[in-house]
Image (cartoon, rainbow, N blue to C red; front, side, top):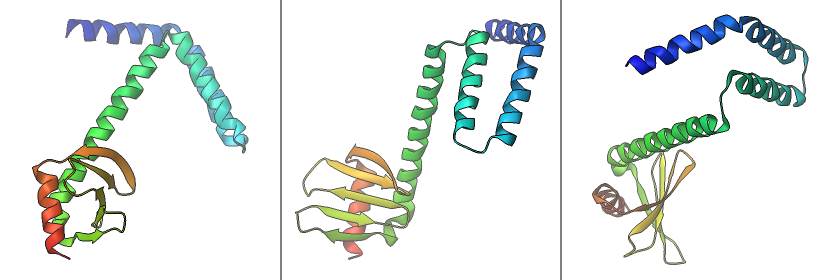
Length: 150
Protein backbone atom coordinates (compact mmCIF):
# COMPACT_ATOMS: atom_id res chain seq x y z
CA UNK A 1 0.00 0.00 0.00
CA UNK A 2 2.82 2.39 0.88
CA UNK A 3 4.54 1.59 -2.42
CA UNK A 4 1.34 2.46 -4.34
CA UNK A 5 1.08 5.80 -2.53
CA UNK A 6 4.71 6.66 -3.23
CA UNK A 7 4.28 5.75 -6.91
CA UNK A 8 1.17 7.91 -7.08
CA UNK A 9 3.01 10.78 -5.43
CA UNK A 10 5.89 10.27 -7.86
CA UNK A 11 3.50 10.54 -10.83
CA UNK A 12 1.87 13.68 -9.42
CA UNK A 13 5.29 15.24 -8.90
CA UNK A 14 6.35 14.27 -12.42
CA UNK A 15 3.18 15.81 -13.88
CA UNK A 16 3.67 18.98 -11.82
CA UNK A 17 7.21 19.36 -13.11
CA UNK A 18 6.32 18.60 -16.74
CA UNK A 19 2.80 20.01 -17.04
CA UNK A 20 3.79 22.27 -19.91
CA UNK A 21 5.01 19.33 -22.03
CA UNK A 22 1.77 17.44 -21.41
CA UNK A 23 -0.32 20.52 -22.17
CA UNK A 24 1.51 21.15 -25.46
CA UNK A 25 1.18 17.47 -26.42
CA UNK A 26 -2.56 17.56 -25.65
CA UNK A 27 -3.09 20.73 -27.71
CA UNK A 28 -1.13 19.29 -30.64
CA UNK A 29 -3.15 16.06 -30.44
CA UNK A 30 -6.45 17.94 -30.42
CA UNK A 31 -5.34 20.08 -33.37
CA UNK A 32 -4.26 17.03 -35.37
CA UNK A 33 -7.47 15.13 -34.67
CA UNK A 34 -9.58 18.20 -35.53
CA UNK A 35 -7.87 19.33 -38.72
CA UNK A 36 -6.14 16.37 -40.35
CA UNK A 37 -8.66 14.12 -42.09
CA UNK A 38 -6.50 11.25 -43.34
CA UNK A 39 -4.98 8.15 -41.84
CA UNK A 40 -1.81 10.18 -41.32
CA UNK A 41 -3.47 11.84 -38.31
CA UNK A 42 -3.60 8.53 -36.46
CA UNK A 43 0.05 7.89 -37.24
CA UNK A 44 0.89 11.33 -35.85
CA UNK A 45 -1.23 10.66 -32.76
CA UNK A 46 0.60 7.39 -32.15
CA UNK A 47 3.99 9.10 -32.60
CA UNK A 48 3.10 11.89 -30.16
CA UNK A 49 1.69 9.50 -27.56
CA UNK A 50 4.78 7.29 -27.91
CA UNK A 51 7.06 10.31 -27.54
CA UNK A 52 5.27 11.43 -24.37
CA UNK A 53 5.39 7.86 -23.05
CA UNK A 54 9.13 7.63 -23.71
CA UNK A 55 9.67 11.07 -22.19
CA UNK A 56 7.74 10.04 -19.08
CA UNK A 57 9.87 6.93 -18.60
CA UNK A 58 7.36 4.28 -19.61
CA UNK A 59 9.21 1.34 -21.17
CA UNK A 60 8.02 -0.95 -23.94
CA UNK A 61 7.98 -3.75 -21.37
CA UNK A 62 5.45 -1.74 -19.35
CA UNK A 63 3.29 -1.24 -22.44
CA UNK A 64 3.64 -4.90 -23.39
CA UNK A 65 2.64 -5.99 -19.88
CA UNK A 66 -0.45 -3.79 -19.94
CA UNK A 67 -1.48 -5.02 -23.40
CA UNK A 68 -0.95 -8.65 -22.38
CA UNK A 69 -2.93 -8.18 -19.17
CA UNK A 70 -5.83 -6.48 -20.96
CA UNK A 71 -5.84 -9.17 -23.67
CA UNK A 72 -5.82 -12.00 -21.13
CA UNK A 73 -8.61 -10.40 -19.09
CA UNK A 74 -10.69 -9.83 -22.23
CA UNK A 75 -10.29 -13.43 -23.41
CA UNK A 76 -11.16 -14.70 -19.93
CA UNK A 77 -14.31 -12.54 -19.83
CA UNK A 78 -15.31 -13.73 -23.32
CA UNK A 79 -14.82 -17.34 -22.26
CA UNK A 80 -16.97 -16.78 -19.17
CA UNK A 81 -19.67 -15.13 -21.29
CA UNK A 82 -19.51 -18.02 -23.77
CA UNK A 83 -19.92 -20.58 -20.98
CA UNK A 84 -22.89 -18.65 -19.56
CA UNK A 85 -24.42 -18.43 -23.03
CA UNK A 86 -24.07 -22.19 -23.44
CA UNK A 87 -26.14 -22.75 -20.33
CA UNK A 88 -28.74 -20.14 -21.31
CA UNK A 89 -29.00 -20.93 -25.04
CA UNK A 90 -28.87 -24.73 -24.96
CA UNK A 91 -32.59 -25.02 -25.69
CA UNK A 92 -32.21 -22.77 -28.76
CA UNK A 93 -29.15 -24.58 -30.12
CA UNK A 94 -29.36 -26.53 -33.36
CA UNK A 95 -27.19 -29.55 -34.17
CA UNK A 96 -26.02 -30.25 -37.72
CA UNK A 97 -23.90 -33.17 -38.92
CA UNK A 98 -21.52 -32.05 -41.65
CA UNK A 99 -20.48 -34.13 -44.68
CA UNK A 100 -16.85 -34.30 -43.50
CA UNK A 101 -17.84 -36.11 -40.30
CA UNK A 102 -17.75 -33.06 -38.06
CA UNK A 103 -20.71 -31.44 -36.38
CA UNK A 104 -21.73 -27.81 -35.96
CA UNK A 105 -23.93 -26.44 -33.22
CA UNK A 106 -25.36 -22.97 -33.57
CA UNK A 107 -27.25 -20.86 -31.08
CA UNK A 108 -28.01 -17.11 -31.19
CA UNK A 109 -24.54 -16.16 -29.88
CA UNK A 110 -22.44 -19.32 -30.17
CA UNK A 111 -21.06 -21.58 -32.84
CA UNK A 112 -19.35 -24.79 -31.82
CA UNK A 113 -17.61 -27.16 -34.25
CA UNK A 114 -16.22 -30.52 -33.28
CA UNK A 115 -15.54 -34.10 -34.26
CA UNK A 116 -17.46 -36.96 -32.62
CA UNK A 117 -15.48 -38.73 -29.86
CA UNK A 118 -12.91 -35.92 -29.80
CA UNK A 119 -11.92 -34.03 -26.67
CA UNK A 120 -11.54 -30.73 -28.57
CA UNK A 121 -14.09 -28.30 -30.02
CA UNK A 122 -13.73 -24.94 -31.75
CA UNK A 123 -15.89 -22.20 -30.30
CA UNK A 124 -16.94 -18.81 -31.68
CA UNK A 125 -18.84 -16.33 -29.54
CA UNK A 126 -20.65 -13.48 -31.29
CA UNK A 127 -18.53 -14.13 -34.38
CA UNK A 128 -15.24 -13.97 -32.46
CA UNK A 129 -13.20 -17.18 -32.51
CA UNK A 130 -12.23 -18.24 -29.01
CA UNK A 131 -10.03 -21.04 -30.28
CA UNK A 132 -10.03 -24.72 -29.50
CA UNK A 133 -11.29 -25.82 -26.09
CA UNK A 134 -11.17 -29.13 -24.27
CA UNK A 135 -14.57 -30.66 -23.62
CA UNK A 136 -15.92 -30.04 -20.14
CA UNK A 137 -19.27 -30.83 -18.51
CA UNK A 138 -20.90 -27.58 -19.67
CA UNK A 139 -19.86 -28.15 -23.28
CA UNK A 140 -20.96 -31.81 -23.16
CA UNK A 141 -24.37 -30.77 -21.79
CA UNK A 142 -24.64 -28.11 -24.52
CA UNK A 143 -23.89 -30.71 -27.23
CA UNK A 144 -26.33 -33.21 -25.70
CA UNK A 145 -29.12 -30.60 -25.51
CA UNK A 146 -28.46 -29.47 -29.10
CA UNK A 147 -28.69 -33.08 -30.34
CA UNK A 148 -32.10 -33.37 -28.68
CA UNK A 149 -33.26 -30.17 -30.43
CA UNK A 150 -32.62 -31.57 -33.94
